[in-house]
Image (cartoon, rainbow, N blue to C red; front, side, top):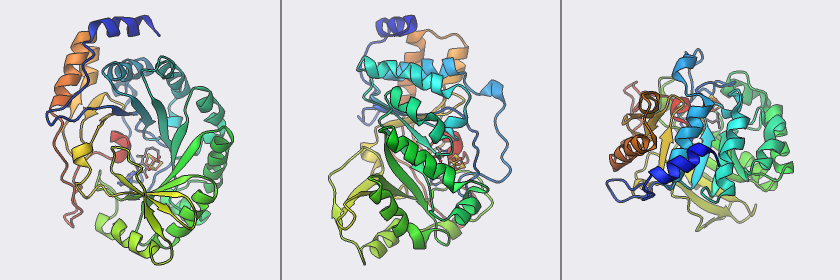
Length: 344
Ligand code: SAM
Ligand code: SF4
């Protein structure tokens, strides 16, 4: 516990964060960088312009903002990016945030990563109380992986997954379903994950940010994927719920859990418990809308704990009821910012 935590605890009213539609916000995703060592075709353009350092929150500012949310009732914190493990000093941030696990304020501290640097960091992540992570991997074929990520080395990611499992961290494999690229091998990828004791989740490509391709060419409906999987597997409904957009089943033949993230259907907005903080301190209360509150401006203007609490409550109060994604052949993305900026 830092002196700042004490001051915050005394200054804030401790009433949970409840939005204008009665939903309690208990889950914060924090993007710690917009940079990445990969360039996945659906996520980034080949030549991305990254943010100047001065715009990006310092590690201390990230800690202060995340801590403010924890003190207002956030129970689950996911560190993401860009690629979180390429941010210099990120392990120090994770170590510091782990104090909230020890006090019981936080239930879970977790991370979404592309896995390229996991071999190096897995033992420390385990030591800092990280119990589960999501690793994004769209294919088991090294050549296709190199193409989809524009240069990535699949062996490093698999080595990272093994290191995390060896350190006692549960791994969920996330794969974006892409029509002409990995559709045919999704069953192999799922079976591979389940054989290692990992859950797997398939994600529909979302229209976030300008990329070089037409998204309608990449888009693959998970309804169709599910129908295909059901032609040779038995998918049993699972009661596993997360408050997020994933719907889970158990694959009888592999014994593993499989999630479907279908952001294009609205059915999860009613139960949405999450907000996202970008690495520039912008709070987005809905992934699929342009709403934004500048918390960096609030703290850099010298706001005290009370002032920050007010800014957070104001933003959460205005959380939109739902999003309005559509994949249409208009050329323009539904939301201009990339997933790597918002934090997936
Ligand atoms: N770099 C880390 C990683 O890849 O896991 C964390 C950030 S990444 C933006 C988080 C997740 O968003 C990944 O699982 C990635 O596949 C997914 N993602 C990125 N762009 C997407 C898009 N346009 N539609 C759907 N998922 C996307
Ligand atoms: Fe990087 Fe993750 Fe985006 Fe791929 S999905 S480019 S790994 S941020």
